[in-house]
Every structure is written in C-alpha cells, then in structure tokens.
Length: 147
Image 1 (cartoon, rainbow, N blue to C red):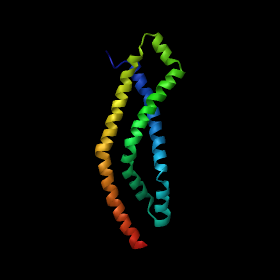
Image 2 (image 1 turned 180 degrees about the horizontal axis):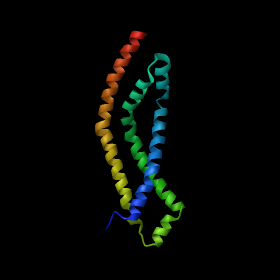
Image 3 (image 1 turned 30 degrees about the vertical axis):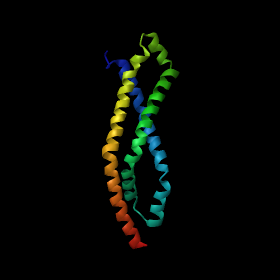
Image 4 (image 1 turned 135 degrees about the vertical axis):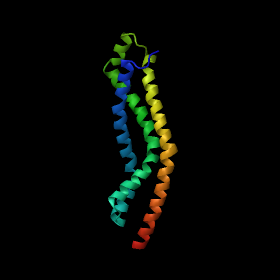
C-alpha cells in the first residue's frame, strides 16, 4: 500500500490550516484564564511587559499539553467535515477510494501530534516549571522590597 499519494498529501495538507487556527484559538482561550493575574502584575506591581511575556512563555508548555491534542482532534474533524460538505468524500468513493485509504494521513497527523505533546510534556513542562519558580521567587522578593 502506497502512503505517499496525491490523495494522502491533499488530506494531510488540508489538516494543517485548521490545526494552526485551533492552536491559536485554544492558546488564546487558555491565556484568558490568566488575564486577571497579568493585569494585576502590570497595574499593581509595575512589572515590565517583557517579563510578563516571559512568564507566559514559561507557562505555555502546561497549556500546550492540552492544546495540541485538542487541536489535532479538531483539525481532523474540520477537515473531514469540509470534505464532506464539498462532496469530496463522495467523489473519492465514486473514484474507487475506500474510506480506509483516507486514514494513513490522519494517523500520521495524529502521530505527529502525539510526538509534539510528548516532547512538550517530557522536556518543556519541567523546564518551564523550573524557570517559572526561579522567576516568580525573584519577582516576589522584588515586590516585597518595593511594597
């Protein structure tokens, strides 16, 4: 069974834009939970905006371990929903392509998502937590001295 066909590449390429859009949307939604802490740090303690972005960068691996799987799932769902609404699935089935022939690009896309999530959980999460703890203790001492 050849996996590198035009149909497989087409399905795989169709999943990338919804994945990116979902990553941006879910990242924004997860960051909205932190908006009160961010505004408190900026308004009350006068923390520089660069430091705020740095702290958000340290917390991103925690968010990404949830965002990546949700984005992969939504990308696959939206891709096949779009293909269905454009009658592309019917055209492929009429052309002799079985539904199982459309699965390898989905499995490859999901496998890439698994590796990204695993790398985030194994490497990004401990690094981000360590950096966050060292940064937050440093800022707490500065806030105590200024307050």
